[in-house]
Amino acid sequence: MSGGMILLVVITVLILMGLGHRVLDRLRLSDKAALAILIAIVISTIFIPDINITDKVSFNVGGFIIPMALAIYLFVKAETGKEKIRSIIGALVTGAVVYLVQRYVLPSDPEAMYIDPNYVYPLIGGMIAYILGRSRRGAFIAGVVGIVISDLIQLIINNMNNIAAPTRFGGAGGVDTTFMTGVLAVLIAEIVGETRERLQGGTAKKRLHFDKGHFVSSLGENNKKNKNELYKTRGDKDDKK
Image (cartoon, rainbow, N blue to C red; front, side, top):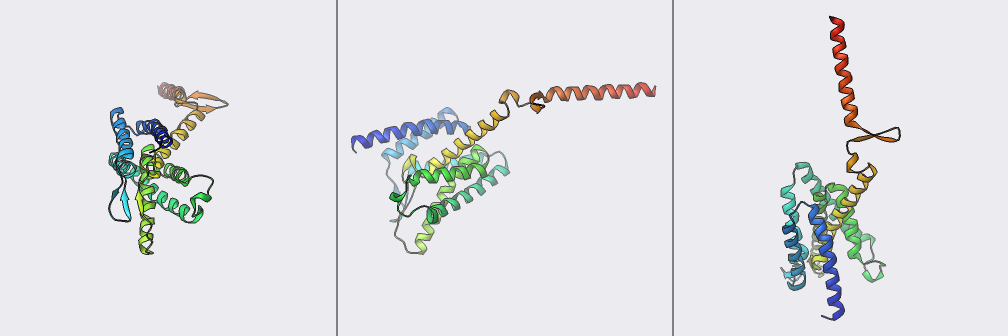
């Protein structure tokens, strides 16, 4: 490996560690668990070669097995059935859209594109995964599984048409489309969530409602309403006496 390639790998790993830790932290993983997952992804990306299942199919530990294991774990830990359903729908739609974009929208020759398709797919998949997955956890699940579904669609079509092109699940390791789509989906959820919170006045104003150009305490309004109802009840009792 040349010096330039080693430098590129080091920079990529540093970026992965920074983004990955932020994302895993938002997925309610402990610091030790998040760090262990990131180290496993980095080590497997650099040192463990792809696992060949057949001459046309291979798996990468850091780019496929670890992200899929994490997605399955998060799916099992989902708090509601609605969140699980959204994750499944998000994954199916993400997979279908990414495949269609790859097949019919983007040029067949990657060199004819102004941007690397490995950046395009995570952006498209990440946005769809967030919109349909809704939660950070659902977005990650939909993003990771969605890319795997798109690869499965491509594999099935290749086999049906006797195309010898290999399918490498997570072949680029930690910077593969599979893992990066899940990462971007969570980051999009984070950005959208923080933006909505700022527009609403921040966490300090969650209990406030907007009235005549100002934030007014809903708690105060409720207390005032309760007091008025209490005085009215007492007045009715006095009138009856």
